[in-house]
Length: 64
Image (cartoon, rainbow, N blue to C red; front, side, top):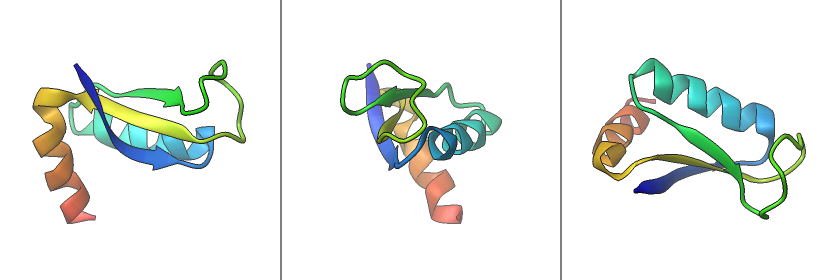
């Protein structure tokens, strides 16, 4: 099961969060909040990680 850990206001911002989390070894997905097809630059995106890795994300975010 995937859980939302962050939201980003653009695709570029979402991709930066994804790179950060995947750099820590955490699989990450980004999905548009509105249900529109992915790829639109100006849209709100959810950053999702596996439920069992959520505690690691909280640790990563605390370090920022």
